[in-house]
Length: 63
Image 1 (cartoon, rainbow, N blue to C red):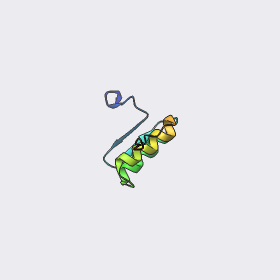
Image 2 (image 1 turned 60 degrees about the vertical axis):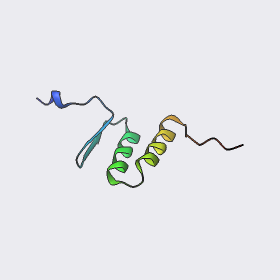
Image 3 (image 1 turned 135 degrees about the horizontal axis):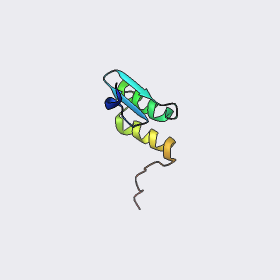
Image 4 (image 1 turned 60 degrees about the horizontal axis):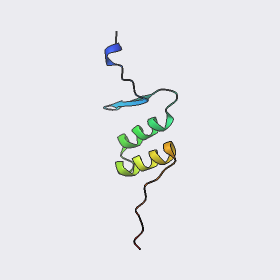
């Protein structure tokens, strides 16, 4: 009945509803932090990328 509304994503949000499948705790946390505006979205995405992919973008030092 609601198959046409299903989104094939690990986590989704709509208004004040956030949901995720059981294998997506980082994606769920990212969506919650963005919804609550606990930090700038850029910082939240940096946090997510660090824990999801093990990488962090840092500016190159001036030489």
